[in-house]
Length: 445
Image (cartoon, rainbow, N blue to C red; front, top):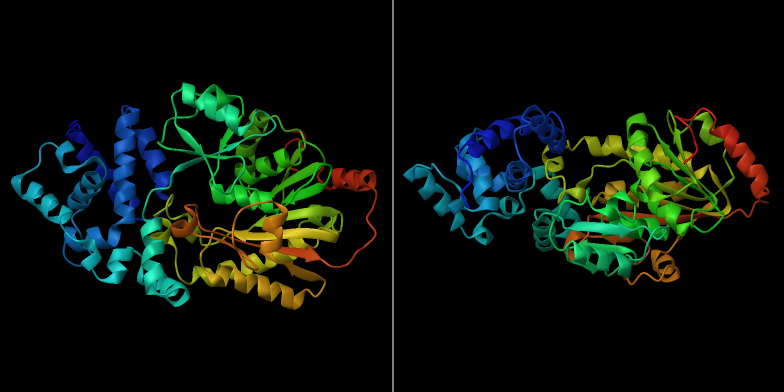
């Protein structure tokens, strides 16, 4: 089916804005579509997929689209559309343009220089090669340059995996169980979910399998006091609340009021009443201090470079600066130190990132253990066995797109050694109410 001729011009227009890298690609696309309300769902999908194809293949496409660092924006748009919709779907092309696209299609990319095959900036390619070696870097890059599948988490408060699969099949939407996440389903295509009764009723949430595993290794139990320290829009928070069977107290901390606001409608759909969103100013906020030594489990999904999410956010590799890694390390160490103060004796902290770089992962954990003798590392192999997750790991969780078909995730479990006498839950909960009285909005779910 031929695309409307105007699609090429629109793709070129928004691509020019995206490649300025002034804001995330999804934000730029969303703004562009809002300014062009005449587009239907199909047109928006075609343009967005073409833009993301250019971002994934930028090194290769730029080399063929023009000389030096000034490629033809029209040629880049053509390459993106041809990659996703096919050359035959493009109408109104000149003979030269058709020949150009056909020539590119016939290129054997395995014969290209390794960095061009990887489609990574030089600094990131060099870091990956130093860490993984050239062969595995190319395997990893190939996975990162492939669009991510659509993963769902079944809300165990509302349903179970078999029933959700059966309901999806009626839509009809084909889905299959995930190998690692016990409540996970992978949808084989990418249908619109927002109008499905399953979604509206809160029986399903969109969540990558790696993220689901991360939530599970926290090991949250009924009746415990748990903190999601960098909750964001709350995907892991909701998973933790369901694991706790809607009991205990689950605090969703974040420094962004906007992100916490996005959590509230998701909470309403989920049926959870044990989640308490808390707006904090920083990792040393007084609200955190008042909960010190009272919490059973803490999840720190730390801000990071995001290099594990390139399947979904390919612009990150071009927007991120190499010097930002050092800035991230300082922030990660400070957040981990602040979060650790919450734990009672015997309590567990999960430090996690969606980064693939050791500087943000192993290094931060080892640095923390070197300065916090009251904490010890719990081998990930032990934690995974406790949670009955069929993954082979050593001391750390390292989920990799080319090995596990998930986003890239790192996690370490740290346990506080000191067996301090725990306060009664009633007293701790009362203190917690005091600590959250200034939170953004009501703390009632």
